[in-house]
Length: 307
Ligand SMILES: NC(=O)c1ccc[n+]([C@@H]2O[C@H](COP(=O)([O-])OP(=O)(O)OC[C@H]3O[C@@H](n4cnc5c(N)ncnc54)[C@H](OP(=O)(O)O)[C@@H]3O)[C@@H](O)[C@H]2O)c1
Image (cartoon, rainbow, N blue to C red; front, side):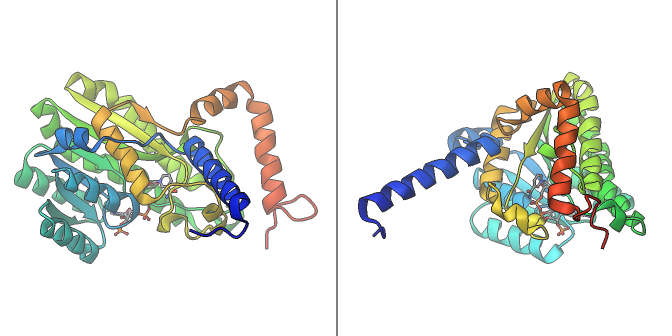
């Protein structure tokens, strides 16, 4: 590869690469997973992945299937799930598509009954399907459905799913639930993300509260808190595309690590110190959030730009 500034160009490129690696490492969860260990853990096991039609869920389903798991694919886009199942099966893996709207309680009831009948108790559930939303409060006065939609898919849907699947898993005496969550539920909530963060936070709290009950029956619960992952979810906010983030495959690797090690949580290294700081420095943290909002979203009078 020829560099425009000779040796100096090589150095500049190496420094840029090192800086990018360092910021990515700091901003995102530790994600190195061992393929042999993954195969050992999931080979012959049945894993359900929600939100498998795109992004993190699709990459996770491919990775787990390649390691020998039978994957059950859930999302609304039937055609994409069929294509994914066909591509996994053609490569020697085993996948089944279960197109379902997880925001529809009756449909989720039918799904869990069908899955338990067809596959018995599941070994791993990756609860990944979700909907993001960034909108200012003044744009939501006439949009109560913003809150309904986020609470349905980020909170109620995953609960309905687990209510249907957990009895057989607990009876079986083992299993693992992996919750794909956001760092936003762990640190000071940002303006404009309220509907999304509240719904993700609600599920996170519910799952943490039932985890000891599940643990008593041999089930582990892991929450993976992602910073930024470059999927279609972040496309409506171009600013996010310029921040350090993971690819969907890298995110799937963090989920593979969760599946192997079954820790309570996986998160970027900065989250724990930020959590402590957000308690100890609650006042300054709130003031910083207000300044950030004024700097980027307010008009020259300091009020929010309501146009
Ligand atoms: N991207 C990020 O920066 C980021 C950061 C932190 C956390 N996360 C979390 O990561 C998870 C995956 O997000 P992603 O980035 O991979 O986004 P994505 O590419 O938009 O994928 C979202 C998935 O959820 C499915 N889904 C949405 N509504 C559904 C419904 N009503 N019923 C069934 N499935 C539904 C979608 O499938 P259909 O449209 O086919 O139904 C799709 O497969 C989400 O829980 C998100 O909160 C993402």
